[in-house]
Amino acid sequence: MRNDLYGYSPITERVPIRWPGGARVAFYVGLNVEHFVLGKPSTSINQGTAALVPDPLNHGWRDYGPRVGIWRMIESFDRHGVRPSALINSDVTEHYPQIVEAGRARDWAWLAHGKNNSTVQAEVEADERAYLTEVVESIEKATGRRPRGWMGPALSETFQTPALLAELGLHYVLDWTADDQPFRLNVPGLLSVPYTLELNDLGLFTAHSISGPDFVRIVKDQLDQLYADSEHSGRVMSLALHPFVTGQAFRMKYLDQALEYVVNHPGVWTTTSDDIAEHYARTTAA
Image (cartoon, rainbow, N blue to C red):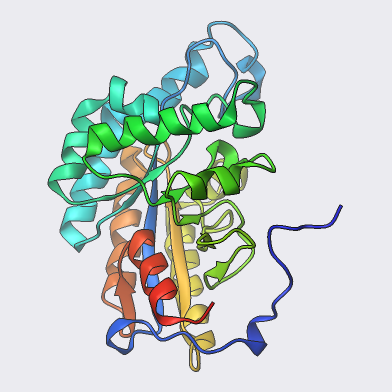
């Protein structure tokens, strides 16, 4: 099946990207702020009980994020001057309004991340336009700002999703993790902004069982290589975090160490995915 959403473009043949202030790497934190439906299998740390209804083991692990983990992480973001790009389910605005208020007070960027993280976009059986409209408008009402970006639950889309998002006024998606630079999609006005499945706490800590020091080393290695790559054209570094994973007490000092290295590194623009998309759209030719 041919991919009609975007074509092939080797990174070696593009017009150079210049970030503000002469920065070489644009860095943002993709903070997954999610709601999971009780009784529906979702992201799990133990597959042995994932099909049970209810599933206290896995649901409680996920529920730790909005109850405890995210508040530790907010303290770390504040210490290091990081404004997260919050990938927010619209159900979060109903169930965890205190998180929305904390983000509004800190001027977070808000991206639409579906209705909840127990329903992937490809499973939407009703009118997708109406579904996406409700998601976007619910987030806009709660945050006071219409989302400019989208990431589907489990990075999922239908073939119609990008065009529908553009109709709703969104400017970029994170679902296609195919690049270290933003690129234009074959949907007028819509970009792809880099996100990551590799520099992602969910995979690193749960699938690969790395240690905290390993996490810090991986973050440093990622930045060091992107910085070297960016000698002639800017790169994007995203760090994907989940409060029920990195928000665990024994991991927090390693998040602090990783952020301290990145935000104090010469040539790094600590920003949001919104600002990356806006700068790229404004300064590069279509």
